[in-house]
Image (cartoon, rainbow, N blue to C red; front, side, top):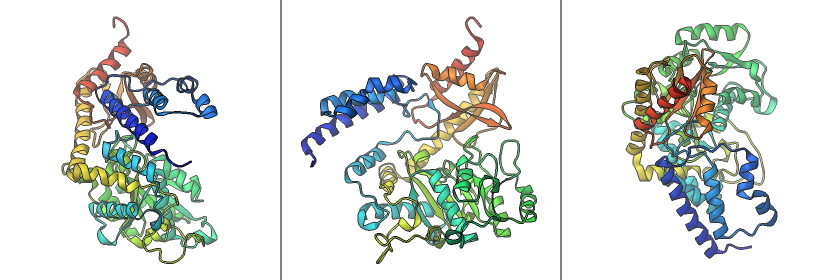
Length: 463
């Protein structure tokens, strides 16, 4: 059945109007930030079984469905959204998703999406320049940071053990990473064939940051055990605490000892755009590979994550694939040789349109504002009895405790009525509440209300 252009236009208008109202009421904090109803109730409200079985949706019935669908979701634009590290996307990125939904140009093969591929080339060139890799670096955008970390470690494996692609993974490879590293690193080690036991934990300080002074000891342990270091991973910033590792110290150590240096900058690399926070990434140019998620602090919708390497050839060596229906002729503009995905979405368009609308300065201002709001929460919490903050925040992530109660229970009670969404994390084996400032609408009023609510919950009625 060919497109009914008139019906599409009507449904598109319904979508635009519905989403505009949804974002507006979310930013003003009118509905709950999260409903949290069980799947069966949500399915019944949305009429999923009937629609799947019978079909027949029209623009009018679609409007009703969309309103209910949006109402049951999590409102990332809401000022009380303080949960996971996912952006409240700016509208230019939403436009890009809309364009991709209609055009569907999977551009890992250039001839399938020349404009999309060219946009990605330029976005990557911009990111490489910001990192300091310049004209010699290489990059690709992937669907998320987990896949980006896997891709970067494939490049590291190819550099250390080029025979692994054809002969299998040598049993002596090791991955050095702190216990605070994102779970996707351990998952990548298992997928790559190293196994979880090949991940060697690095010595850290009390907040989970790599202890640079003890790196020689860790490397010595690895080599005395007869293992070859495939890569050493640092965080910029840590997913749990939002704290940055000493990239210069670690990078200089890796360079002096011939160890591949990988930086997980999924969340914190965007601080490169904020002048007052750029120092947190001092030494990032020493990395052999880096990941940088646009769908976190660059306000793009999920997913769009960059894999960047200091030497372009290292990324090209990550994959050694053959397929007569794809790999033939001049592939100079194809990205398929650098990525797991063949049908890769037009990811660069989301980043580009945000840049085109807001500019590099505008995105940097957004990062700075979110970091400042998190610091403001830290200041407010420290002033209140019963609140404990174990560190001064370096990003838009703050961990804290209130009293001696079960912190996970505090979180569950906060989320029960949909008034707030936040997460939790362990520091030194102790559970903390965790705030991640992602929504531009979050302000002092929101932060004060959260602190009030926590205190009221623990005091109880008449406390």
